[in-house]
Image (tube, rainbow over all chains, first blue to last red; front, top):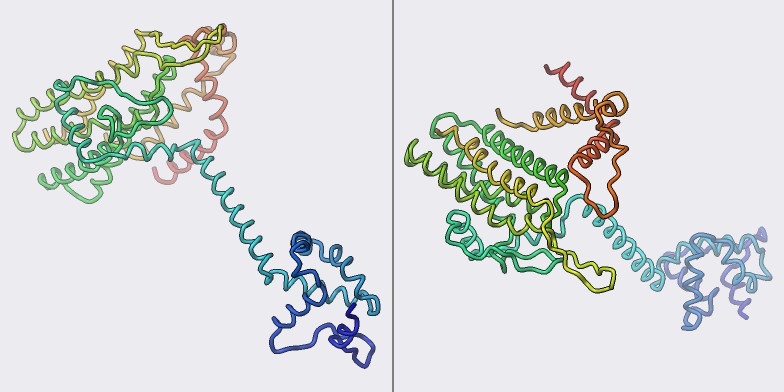
Length: 344
Length: 82
């Protein structure tokens, strides 16, 4: 019982109303001692939990929670003024209390974390960002081997991809896996090379670079959309994803670069010969790589009637799949010719 | 014939318009391409024709309202910029 202390701390003025707050040079000091006076349980560990729960309610409902602890100690003082004074000062001083600030920080961090998760999940539905990094996990030996396979596919013997079902394979470990690094670099090199060749003919201006880039991107987009449409309409189920299709369609930029260089150096005849060779090798490369992925249905291990896992890998709609493969392989030479005929 | 971004946009608008124009009752039902009466049994794969008709119907349902806005934008742009 420390009514005397409170009497001294809040001396009454001449009007009989109690002074709420004494003006001090360091208001922070007064706030701490105020809390210690009115909440003697603050140092007590078993009451700190109760106090922290109360403090949250303090922010929302200032009158309700402050009523009960204050009532017992303010019997000899005007109730309304005292409680108003305590509420204002308690709310302002709640946030300086280390217990409360720690909890507020943790709560805020948890909120930010969950918000970020929701945003990531929504983005993942439209653009598969988490799988994108697998396509760029390459190293120099993979790049050199893959380039040699694209340009001389007749030498390569083993075309199967060894990977587990759920995780995309990193191209570092498997040469037959599609990647997006080579297509991206080849596309950029093609745009720069086209600008160079245009400059050698005095036809260059900086807008031509962006026109070339948009043109190539547009054709790639059209090709991938047509392939996706064909896969859906003909009801061909494969393990191929959209990013895989983009990668396979963009491998022809490597061929285009070689054709343009040879055409630049060796004239019209060299250009024609190189065009035919690159078309054949690219078609061969695509057909061999995609044969295993398109011609057989993806392996599904659903348990059959007797509860034993069965492997379904029969070939459904073989004719449709072969036509699709042929279509994919034949559009490549046409597009290579379309891109490079300007230097003829 | 370079493909610019605007070209791509115009092409897609034209193609989607062409698909949305095909009226379900007045036209498609008369030539037997109605998408409602095809019902493949469970476990059988839907045929190519039913897939195409399903695609037409879904494009018509989804793109009706956005096509109104996209067509208006195209008309305004062509009026202003030729």
